[in-house]
Length: 312
Image (cartoon, rainbow, N blue to C red; front, side, top):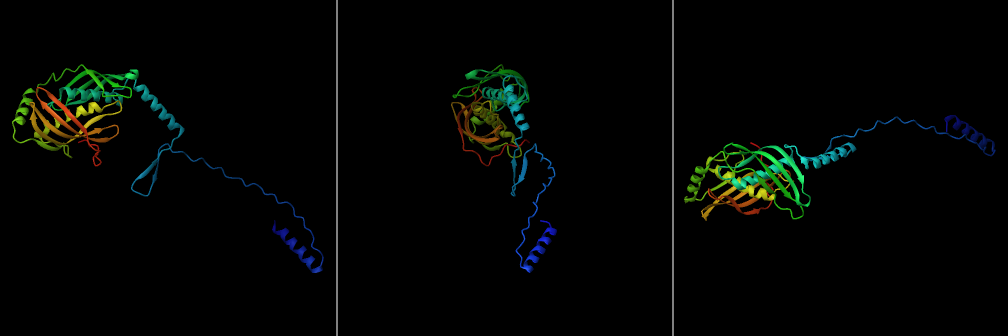
């Protein structure tokens, strides 16, 4: 109601009261409210990266924003992975390198020694073939390198990861025929004779240490631990794992039995997909004639204080 209309009403009421006349009925005009125009509000942009929210503590909470574009990209990645697992593979991608790493573990269990410990140098070619319920087969051409002498050799291989609920370790066939370019027989015989006749049983810890150092006299037993670890890694490998030996926590020589040097090993394995450090205990034996064997393998409780190894 406007101020002028209020003043008129007060005057009418006052005159009526003075003269004793009845109050007049005043009809007020209807009040019409005009709509107030609103200012246009600009749309809030949706971030394409996860939003970092400060929780007030020492860590940040990451909240992913699932936009339609991101969902499409995730679907495309899934499609790419499915395609990549069948037919010709990119040799530098994980599916090819995981299968090639299994070839390496297989060859270490067959040819490894304190003076030969293989490493995967390069994957040249790789294809994958679905075998239905029987699993999946990988055909590979790879170059391996002896970590001790540095010599390289290229070979072909097939790796079959069994399918079905039973699963099982991968099956490997390869054209590799052994250490054709190097001869370590004299070194192996000398090492065997030294520790077969020694009155003091060998023991060692942390190979390598936190600085990446291994004492020269302990290097053969570090290599032997790496080769023995390949027995575990071959058995545990699947299409979704990628194992490396991280460290020999301890090695203790036992009494010789059946002309075999015997050692208790505690080793840390690095599963690079999950970034988990896994602790195993091994009973390994070795002689130049029989090679390396791992007769007992025991998974130890999870190592909560262990971290993935740093490169040196």
